[in-house]
Length: 475
Image (cartoon, rainbow, N blue to C red; front, side, top):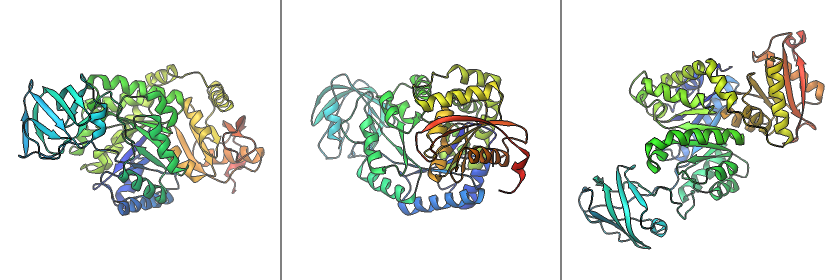
């Protein structure tokens, strides 16, 4: 099954999409990666979903990525004597370490790390940013605030501290348990929530030990460059960014993160409310279509559906709609102009030089495909960073690498035995390109690989090959 687009689609699984028939239909409609949200999924159910994904993968003969999204720390206030209180702008309100039920004047905040981080002048946001408090005084057990934007506040609503790094790990006890269960189930990507510093990524990678790649969910606008360097991929979590930041700042930050990830050669996913109205409607709004298109024009590797595919009434239609938008955008001449203009100089490494050369040769000679022999997937990722006009075919003996590359822009993954020598490399590259529908007899492609074969990170050669008439013969 060959996609007609380069941008990938991530579909979240949930009550509306948890049976095998629906998951298979979602893949057929265009989903490349399936996300499992551990905020709502017990371990047994997660393992069952991974088993179904692998079953669908076997049926279609295509590597499919399973992504587990960890819940992360949830910062919440305590309870109230009554159901809720109405905070009035201009009045004072106290958050403290007293677990007694709150009232109109105060409430319990069971997070000492927040008190430690607060300073006069800082802002506190409650209930997804609906209520805004300005800190007047702060101590290790108490914060006196003035209500800047008031409203109804009920028990256990979320707390956010914009532009402040809090002194705790992104991995909670629940996350540790979920991460171990996900690794045992054989997932391909781990999405780490509430990443504030590179050390958060290092902690997750230490546990994963290469069994899964780690994606940083950017929910706080801190240390972006350092986090991109540490992570294997990035998710622009616009919902939480919209709480941490004024909403008007989120589009610019989305563009900055997308471009920074591409410069680093790391896949980037744009997420949250992309086709939100399709939770209850079979068609999206014009603004939502434009939103998805904007992310694709910016060169994102993948766009993500959350509730649209997890709990909405039209999960398959949502994926199919996103697929059509991507195909339409990528056939627009403006798309290629923007993609080419954003290309950065290759890094001073052999792999980057080879990837850049392969892209330039393919475009100069109008070759039908760039074929990457890769064990770890790194070669294909470096070529994807170049955003070539020619399709990218990744051939790897490592099924794990093939699945991870399901997230990468433009990469069509094939799992096959490693090449025995250079002649075998060229011959099988041509056979696979022909079989997968990327090249016909007499057409040319370029092959990038590393010698000796099977050595990760050794990309050091390119070959131009012609698809001969023998490709139709049995292997």
